[in-house]
Image (tube, rainbow, N blue to C red; front, side, top):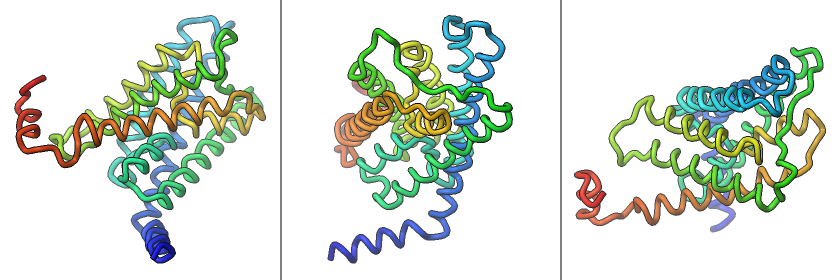
Length: 255
């Protein structure tokens, strides 16, 4: 039965609706990475010492918030607006999408990130494509923990914003996700880069040819995303919550 089940899941992952979802992920991730990496390139070009200038951090944080909000919004109806392999991993761990579909999401997101970085490299006439780096005083373990905590907050917000049991949030949901990302960049950008997105870190690293500490931007976010999804679905707001608890939450009791 296992091979049959796997075949059935794969067939579900290549339906027309699924293919549209992968295209939506590619488009939204492309423009997200274009905005984030492009804003870092722009700040380095305009500011003499962007690494030491606080305004550079603000520029990248604002770009993160605006770009992620928009990217999630435009892809939400087609693919759920993941725009991030860590979000996809968290959804797969929580049972919201199957593994073959998650793998196709990853391919779309990683390919989009690489293409966006190539586009920036070509159109800016060979300008350096920045990569995510950790501060000299940080260890890889500490940076990974930091990325994991930030991604936990991001994915927890994604779960809350997309929870069908809540009232319809409309455009507020994607905005909340973007604001969380922007706030995290302001808090941790100087220490780990504030990636929270393995695809974004991967694409710029491929084009720059620098993979140092790349594991930081995969291990931490994937673990943080998994914990966020499991905690939200099974502890904070379990799917099979008793009616009394559901009524209490909807009425604001116990908050």
